[in-house]
Length: 143
Image (cartoon, rainbow, N blue to C red):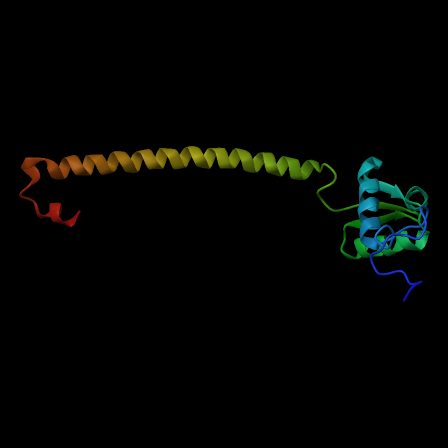
């Protein structure tokens, strides 16, 4: 019909927001970005609503889901804190990563040493079986 706005079409006027601009997914991305810039992962929900230029109930839609999956927790009435990993430096994770890297380095050294020992044993066994004085012993055919 002539006067209807098709799904996915441009807004009627320059100031009007598209459906994508007001989507909860996009708003959540903006919210997480705002949260990542906050000090110690703590964000005031009133400030978030103001900065993101949305009604506070839209912020609550986001925080309810994030709290439900235990990525945030309420710190006080209007403040939430990030509990997940990934956007803030977590010293316990960093320490664990460093420890695992050291362990991996040590395991790699041991692996190289074992490979060398296996190679040396293989050569010694070959020399032993190739030695003419040992040719008469039946163990040669079993290798």
